[in-house]
Image (cartoon, rainbow, N blue to C red; front, side, top):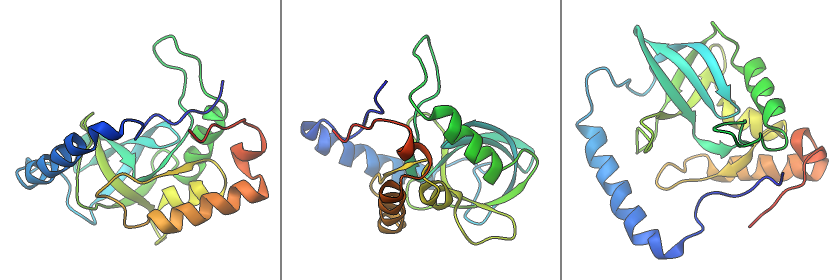
Length: 178
C-alpha cells in the first residue's frame, strides 16, 4: 500500500482550520491543572506507533503525539498497515524505550483533535527531539501543522537527507507525495 498523505488536501477548509487553531490556543489556556507544562518530565509506558507514545506524567496516563513528523499508519480498524509502519514503530521503541524518562517541550497548541498532547519528546540526557531523530534515520516524513512549526525547517532537511540516502523506510517503501 502506498504511503499516503492524509492532511492538508482541502484548501477550502483553510479558514475553518485557522478558526479551529485559534480556538485550540484559547482552550489550551483553560486546560485542566493535570495538563503538563513545558519541560515536564514523563515516563514512557507504551509506543503506539512511529509518532505516538503513552506516558505517565505525575501519575496521569497521557497519549503524546510527536510534533513535526508523520509515520506510516499501523494496521487499525480492519485496514492493513502502511509500508514501513512496523519499522517506524520499532525505531521509536529504540529511541524511547518503555520505562525511559523524557521531557516534553510544547509549542502553541497543546492538544490535537484526538485529545493527545502535542509535544517534542526529548529522551533524558539529550537535547534532541525524538521526532528529529526519527526523521534523520529515515522513519518519518515531515508534517508541519500550524501553528506548531518551530522545528519544521530542521525536520524537513533531515527528511530530505534521509530520502536522498535511502535510509529507513525510504529504502523500502513506495511513496506518494500528493
